[in-house]
Length: 395
Image (cartoon, rainbow, N blue to C red):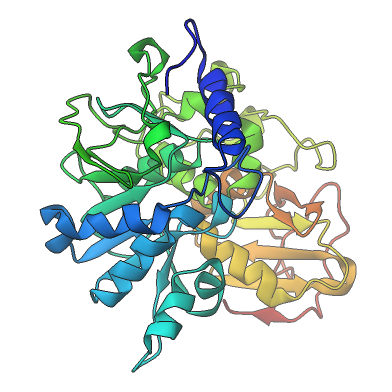
């Protein structure tokens, strides 16, 4: 398929989506616009991955959840490989490990390879899990024989790969495979590529196996200056990674965040009383973390949705890697207090939890006032002092 001259990434996407629909190459789900397109012959194209040595020797395989990759997920399960599938839009974590039941039949394995199987036969894989991915399989809207790749425009495949680099799950030598229709293999101008774009080493189509020999370096981690605050709000696990990299002294300034607000030159985040970050309109501007008794080790959580269970908050804290030593739950008052080992841990937790959402509500997060004699919780300038009779539970 020939592209029009002077095209952008979005122009290329649109031309391919339109062509696949007009030529009746598209398969369910349709229309293929704004998707990684499924196509007639995708299962056949996926079968040729068995010819690749990189698949034969792989033990742990990460395959995107896109429909045209369903056949590859099934092959991985049939080959007794560990199959990791990213959670859709990274809303609840990074990976799900697909675990078929003992003695699973071929029909059950087929189910495991579908989106239903990801929901029914999987366990979450957290940031602290020791994952070493041997092969990455991604979906594409367009790809060139040189290995340049264009996704659907949301950036999740690039972000997933960068997060895997950050957690040590992949390296520059980890091969990347994509499966597309022949019409999706086009000449992509190299000028369109950016540092965060993932390239591919193998392209599988219904008629060809293309070894790209791509020498362009793959992303070496998350480029925080390409990440917006909107994306941070949608991807909880990304906030946890950002918190870890800030603690390691890396520059984690976001795309739409003024650099001077972050104090990135310090290995530890600066005291919250001297930093003003962008706040959700529902959040208080600040909550005093300094007082006559010194800094606080307690974090205030407010604006909990009505009916929220303590287990829901605990789950969110575990996913973000901000588990406190104790948690004081005041569900009827729609608030909770998190008690950490020291002020530094509490400050880091506030940084990670800012913008956290439960359901449709954005939570209020602030450093509580230091506890006083006879008060085991701490308080927040904008909120009433907690009821001392509230239950304290361990996470």
